[in-house]
Image (tube, rainbow, N blue to C red):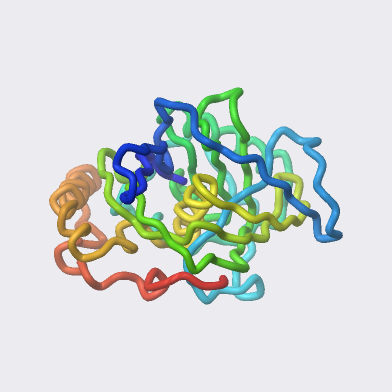
Length: 273
Protein backbone atom coordinates (compact mmCIF):
# COMPACT_ATOMS: atom_id res chain seq x y z
CA UNK A 1 0.00 0.00 0.00
CA UNK A 2 1.46 3.06 -0.20
CA UNK A 3 2.23 2.08 3.10
CA UNK A 4 4.77 1.24 5.59
CA UNK A 5 4.59 0.02 9.11
CA UNK A 6 4.11 -2.94 11.32
CA UNK A 7 0.94 -4.96 11.48
CA UNK A 8 0.50 -6.17 14.99
CA UNK A 9 -2.61 -8.08 16.18
CA UNK A 10 -3.78 -6.46 19.40
CA UNK A 11 -4.95 -9.77 20.80
CA UNK A 12 -1.39 -11.11 20.72
CA UNK A 13 1.17 -8.49 21.71
CA UNK A 14 4.03 -10.93 21.14
CA UNK A 15 3.03 -11.88 17.59
CA UNK A 16 4.41 -9.09 15.42
CA UNK A 17 3.76 -9.10 11.69
CA UNK A 18 5.25 -6.69 9.14
CA UNK A 19 2.71 -4.03 8.32
CA UNK A 20 1.40 -2.67 5.14
CA UNK A 21 4.47 -0.97 4.01
CA UNK A 22 7.58 -1.54 5.98
CA UNK A 23 9.96 -4.30 5.10
CA UNK A 24 9.67 -7.02 7.75
CA UNK A 25 12.58 -7.92 10.01
CA UNK A 26 11.30 -11.48 9.99
CA UNK A 27 9.99 -13.24 6.87
CA UNK A 28 6.28 -12.60 6.44
CA UNK A 29 3.91 -15.54 6.63
CA UNK A 30 2.42 -15.49 3.17
CA UNK A 31 0.10 -18.31 2.14
CA UNK A 32 0.01 -18.90 -1.60
CA UNK A 33 -3.34 -18.31 -3.25
CA UNK A 34 -4.98 -19.39 -6.48
CA UNK A 35 -6.38 -16.90 -8.97
CA UNK A 36 -9.07 -17.70 -11.52
CA UNK A 37 -9.86 -16.25 -14.90
CA UNK A 38 -13.37 -15.18 -15.90
CA UNK A 39 -13.73 -18.63 -17.46
CA UNK A 40 -13.11 -20.25 -14.09
CA UNK A 41 -9.71 -21.69 -15.05
CA UNK A 42 -6.59 -21.18 -12.91
CA UNK A 43 -4.40 -18.44 -14.35
CA UNK A 44 -0.90 -19.37 -15.43
CA UNK A 45 2.06 -17.65 -13.82
CA UNK A 46 3.41 -16.80 -17.24
CA UNK A 47 4.21 -13.22 -16.47
CA UNK A 48 6.41 -11.98 -13.70
CA UNK A 49 3.68 -10.19 -11.76
CA UNK A 50 1.03 -12.05 -9.76
CA UNK A 51 -2.44 -10.46 -9.38
CA UNK A 52 -3.91 -9.60 -5.91
CA UNK A 53 -5.63 -6.50 -4.08
CA UNK A 54 -8.90 -4.61 -2.62
CA UNK A 55 -10.89 -2.61 0.21
CA UNK A 56 -13.33 0.10 1.53
CA UNK A 57 -16.86 1.17 0.95
CA UNK A 58 -17.46 3.54 -1.91
CA UNK A 59 -20.43 3.65 -4.22
CA UNK A 60 -18.60 3.82 -7.53
CA UNK A 61 -19.22 1.38 -10.33
CA UNK A 62 -17.18 0.59 -13.41
CA UNK A 63 -19.65 2.58 -15.53
CA UNK A 64 -19.21 5.65 -13.35
CA UNK A 65 -15.41 5.60 -13.38
CA UNK A 66 -13.68 7.86 -15.86
CA UNK A 67 -11.20 6.10 -18.14
CA UNK A 68 -7.57 7.16 -17.85
CA UNK A 69 -5.96 8.73 -20.92
CA UNK A 70 -2.35 8.20 -21.97
CA UNK A 71 -1.53 11.55 -20.33
CA UNK A 72 -2.99 10.37 -17.01
CA UNK A 73 -0.45 7.54 -16.86
CA UNK A 74 2.58 9.56 -17.91
CA UNK A 75 5.37 9.77 -15.35
CA UNK A 76 8.99 10.70 -14.89
CA UNK A 77 11.45 8.40 -13.15
CA UNK A 78 12.43 8.24 -10.42
CA UNK A 79 9.02 8.35 -8.76
CA UNK A 80 8.55 10.14 -5.45
CA UNK A 81 6.23 9.31 -2.57
CA UNK A 82 3.35 11.78 -2.11
CA UNK A 83 2.83 12.66 1.55
CA UNK A 84 -0.26 13.75 3.48
CA UNK A 85 -1.96 16.24 3.16
CA UNK A 86 -1.26 16.55 -0.58
CA UNK A 87 -4.67 16.71 -2.36
CA UNK A 88 -3.49 14.06 -4.84
CA UNK A 89 -4.20 11.49 -2.13
CA UNK A 90 -7.89 12.48 -2.07
CA UNK A 91 -8.40 12.87 -5.84
CA UNK A 92 -10.56 10.50 -7.88
CA UNK A 93 -8.60 7.70 -9.54
CA UNK A 94 -9.40 6.76 -13.12
CA UNK A 95 -9.94 3.29 -14.55
CA UNK A 96 -7.12 1.83 -16.67
CA UNK A 97 -8.01 0.44 -20.09
CA UNK A 98 -4.63 0.52 -21.85
CA UNK A 99 -2.39 -2.39 -20.88
CA UNK A 100 0.70 -1.26 -22.74
CA UNK A 101 4.46 -0.99 -22.24
CA UNK A 102 4.07 2.32 -20.41
CA UNK A 103 1.90 0.62 -17.79
CA UNK A 104 4.50 -2.12 -17.36
CA UNK A 105 7.23 0.48 -16.93
CA UNK A 106 5.12 2.31 -14.35
CA UNK A 107 4.64 -0.92 -12.42
CA UNK A 108 8.39 -1.57 -12.46
CA UNK A 109 9.09 1.95 -11.18
CA UNK A 110 6.47 1.55 -8.43
CA UNK A 111 8.10 -1.67 -7.25
CA UNK A 112 11.48 0.04 -7.38
CA UNK A 113 10.51 2.93 -5.11
CA UNK A 114 8.53 0.58 -2.86
CA UNK A 115 11.62 -1.53 -2.21
CA UNK A 116 13.88 1.52 -1.84
CA UNK A 117 11.61 2.97 0.84
CA UNK A 118 11.35 -0.36 2.69
CA UNK A 119 7.72 -0.78 1.73
CA UNK A 120 5.62 -3.86 1.06
CA UNK A 121 2.78 -2.11 -0.79
CA UNK A 122 2.12 0.99 -2.88
CA UNK A 123 -0.79 2.55 -4.79
CA UNK A 124 -0.51 4.77 -7.86
CA UNK A 125 -1.88 7.95 -6.20
CA UNK A 126 0.92 7.64 -3.66
CA UNK A 127 3.36 8.41 -6.46
CA UNK A 128 1.20 11.18 -7.90
CA UNK A 129 -0.65 9.18 -10.56
CA UNK A 130 -4.43 9.09 -10.09
CA UNK A 131 -5.28 5.74 -11.65
CA UNK A 132 -6.61 2.47 -10.21
CA UNK A 133 -3.35 0.56 -9.82
CA UNK A 134 -1.57 -1.01 -6.89
CA UNK A 135 1.47 -3.20 -6.31
CA UNK A 136 2.70 -5.14 -3.30
CA UNK A 137 4.98 -7.87 -2.07
CA UNK A 138 4.31 -9.03 1.51
CA UNK A 139 7.95 -10.11 1.89
CA UNK A 140 9.25 -6.69 0.91
CA UNK A 141 12.46 -7.95 -0.72
CA UNK A 142 13.26 -7.78 -4.42
CA UNK A 143 13.58 -11.30 -5.81
CA UNK A 144 11.73 -12.87 -2.88
CA UNK A 145 8.05 -13.55 -2.26
CA UNK A 146 5.26 -12.65 -4.73
CA UNK A 147 5.18 -9.41 -6.72
CA UNK A 148 1.48 -8.62 -6.98
CA UNK A 149 -0.12 -6.18 -9.42
CA UNK A 150 -3.80 -5.27 -9.31
CA UNK A 151 -5.50 -3.07 -11.89
CA UNK A 152 -9.05 -1.69 -11.45
CA UNK A 153 -9.71 -3.87 -8.35
CA UNK A 154 -13.19 -4.28 -6.87
CA UNK A 155 -14.29 -6.00 -3.68
CA UNK A 156 -17.17 -8.46 -3.98
CA UNK A 157 -17.17 -9.67 -0.37
CA UNK A 158 -15.77 -8.75 3.05
CA UNK A 159 -15.74 -11.12 6.00
CA UNK A 160 -17.83 -10.17 9.02
CA UNK A 161 -14.92 -11.10 11.26
CA UNK A 162 -12.51 -8.20 11.74
CA UNK A 163 -9.19 -7.71 13.44
CA UNK A 164 -7.29 -4.78 14.93
CA UNK A 165 -3.71 -4.28 13.72
CA UNK A 166 -1.18 -1.49 13.91
CA UNK A 167 -0.64 0.02 10.47
CA UNK A 168 1.69 2.55 8.91
CA UNK A 169 1.86 4.21 5.50
CA UNK A 170 4.64 5.54 3.25
CA UNK A 171 2.55 8.69 2.79
CA UNK A 172 2.60 9.18 6.60
CA UNK A 173 6.28 8.66 7.47
CA UNK A 174 6.88 7.61 11.07
CA UNK A 175 3.19 7.34 11.97
CA UNK A 176 1.77 4.01 13.21
CA UNK A 177 -1.64 3.34 14.74
CA UNK A 178 -4.37 0.71 15.13
CA UNK A 179 -6.89 0.07 12.34
CA UNK A 180 -9.79 -2.41 12.38
CA UNK A 181 -10.34 -4.31 9.12
CA UNK A 182 -12.08 -7.47 7.85
CA UNK A 183 -9.87 -10.56 8.02
CA UNK A 184 -10.70 -11.79 4.51
CA UNK A 185 -11.84 -10.29 1.22
CA UNK A 186 -12.91 -11.57 -2.18
CA UNK A 187 -11.84 -9.38 -5.06
CA UNK A 188 -12.15 -9.00 -8.82
CA UNK A 189 -9.40 -7.25 -10.77
CA UNK A 190 -7.21 -7.28 -13.86
CA UNK A 191 -3.57 -8.24 -14.06
CA UNK A 192 -0.73 -6.42 -15.81
CA UNK A 193 -1.80 -7.80 -19.20
CA UNK A 194 -5.49 -6.93 -18.71
CA UNK A 195 -6.76 -10.44 -17.93
CA UNK A 196 -9.66 -10.52 -15.45
CA UNK A 197 -9.45 -12.70 -12.36
CA UNK A 198 -11.07 -13.34 -8.98
CA UNK A 199 -9.20 -14.18 -5.80
CA UNK A 200 -9.85 -14.66 -2.07
CA UNK A 201 -7.34 -13.04 0.28
CA UNK A 202 -6.78 -13.54 3.99
CA UNK A 203 -4.20 -12.62 6.59
CA UNK A 204 -1.45 -10.17 5.68
CA UNK A 205 -2.23 -10.07 1.92
CA UNK A 206 -5.86 -9.17 2.72
CA UNK A 207 -4.80 -6.33 5.02
CA UNK A 208 -2.25 -4.97 2.58
CA UNK A 209 -4.79 -5.08 -0.21
CA UNK A 210 -7.43 -3.28 1.87
CA UNK A 211 -5.01 -0.54 2.87
CA UNK A 212 -3.99 0.03 -0.75
CA UNK A 213 -7.54 -0.26 -2.05
CA UNK A 214 -8.53 2.50 0.35
CA UNK A 215 -5.94 4.73 -1.33
CA UNK A 216 -7.64 4.08 -4.67
CA UNK A 217 -10.91 5.29 -3.10
CA UNK A 218 -9.33 8.46 -1.71
CA UNK A 219 -9.50 7.02 1.81
CA UNK A 220 -6.52 7.35 4.16
CA UNK A 221 -5.79 5.00 7.02
CA UNK A 222 -6.55 7.57 9.72
CA UNK A 223 -10.10 7.86 8.30
CA UNK A 224 -10.72 4.38 9.76
CA UNK A 225 -9.28 5.03 13.21
CA UNK A 226 -11.32 5.45 16.37
CA UNK A 227 -11.49 8.87 17.99
CA UNK A 228 -9.03 7.86 20.69
CA UNK A 229 -6.49 6.45 18.26
CA UNK A 230 -6.80 9.49 16.00
CA UNK A 231 -6.18 11.77 18.97
CA UNK A 232 -2.96 9.88 19.75
CA UNK A 233 -1.44 10.77 16.35
CA UNK A 234 -3.00 14.22 15.83
CA UNK A 235 0.23 16.08 16.63
CA UNK A 236 2.13 14.02 14.06
CA UNK A 237 -0.54 14.72 11.45
CA UNK A 238 -0.38 18.44 12.26
CA UNK A 239 3.40 18.29 11.77
CA UNK A 240 2.88 16.87 8.27
CA UNK A 241 0.35 19.61 7.53
CA UNK A 242 2.90 22.27 8.55
CA UNK A 243 5.60 20.54 6.49
CA UNK A 244 3.31 20.73 3.44
CA UNK A 245 2.64 24.45 4.03
CA UNK A 246 6.34 25.24 4.48
CA UNK A 247 7.23 23.32 1.30
CA UNK A 248 4.47 24.64 -0.96
CA UNK A 249 3.66 28.04 0.53
CA UNK A 250 0.00 27.01 0.40
CA UNK A 251 -2.46 26.39 3.22
CA UNK A 252 -2.97 22.74 4.10
CA UNK A 253 -5.95 21.34 2.12
CA UNK A 254 -7.12 19.55 5.25
CA UNK A 255 -6.56 19.98 8.97
CA UNK A 256 -6.90 17.16 11.42
CA UNK A 257 -8.00 19.46 14.23
CA UNK A 258 -11.02 20.72 12.29
CA UNK A 259 -12.10 17.33 11.00
CA UNK A 260 -11.04 14.74 13.54
CA UNK A 261 -14.41 13.10 13.59
CA UNK A 262 -15.54 14.22 10.13
CA UNK A 263 -14.36 11.09 8.40
CA UNK A 264 -15.23 10.43 4.76
CA UNK A 265 -18.66 8.86 4.53
CA UNK A 266 -17.10 6.18 2.37
CA UNK A 267 -14.87 5.12 5.23
CA UNK A 268 -17.69 4.57 7.69
CA UNK A 269 -17.89 0.85 6.99
CA UNK A 270 -17.07 -1.97 4.64
CA UNK A 271 -19.19 -3.26 1.82
CA UNK A 272 -19.19 -4.36 -1.80
CA UNK A 273 -17.69 -1.79 -4.13
